[in-house]
Image 1: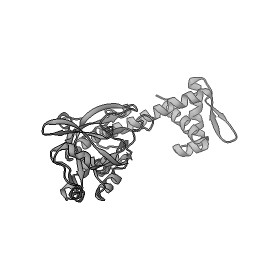
Image 2: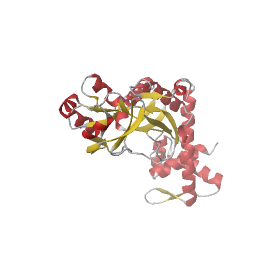
Image 3: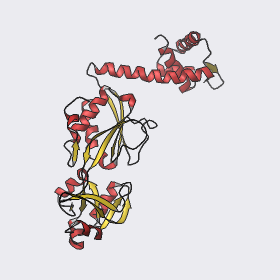
Image 4: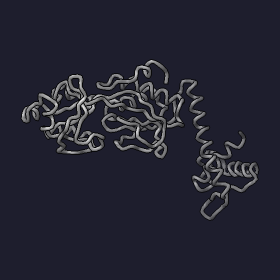
Length: 309
């Protein structure tokens, strides 16, 4: 274990590009840092750094050691975080991504709840309706509707989400309210760009599963733009119930055909392997499941609410 701290010195020297700068970063003297790196070179019997006019550069052996040093440094940092958690101090970094509709509502509540209770925990929320590469972007958790997608990580289904067909009362007053699913096609449909269903909506109505044709008149990938178009009376849309329930309660939106709802979609939590079983990951999942279980239209699998993650 004696070579672990010298590896940190090597990594810092190559990151900064100089021994003096690395010493300042690590809070030790430059001679002390040089001795650490020399001890590392003696331990492995190879030169790891070469001095240049502008600072230091890695030799071929130094490049190899640098890669290992980065990983070992991360593991040491993780060790410190986990040991601190045993004393009730939750720290470290957690990076989460989800689409706009969930991020702006209930996932935002999760982030606020975590930060309010655990001030040493650094939480980063990446709001994107695109499928991000978990490993490349170093995303710890991704929440996705419909399918787990791609991009690495360990995926598991955590529940189902119910959507509704919604429009403003004024729009339906002007265009007429459908009395059966086949009349829905006569209305203007505002299509979410990344929806896998194009020009059709799978629904359940009076106990039957049906495929209902729709007539797209506007396509957008921003949920807020779609909601704004709805408010302006440009048509109807399919939206997650958790995103529009408040507007329905206030009478701003209503369901196009009561009893006719889109087939619920599964949703998934994708977790980066490196954070599995960490204290912060368990706390995030516990807070997430408890919060989402209260959201209208979201059903969390019962076993996730009754056991530690």
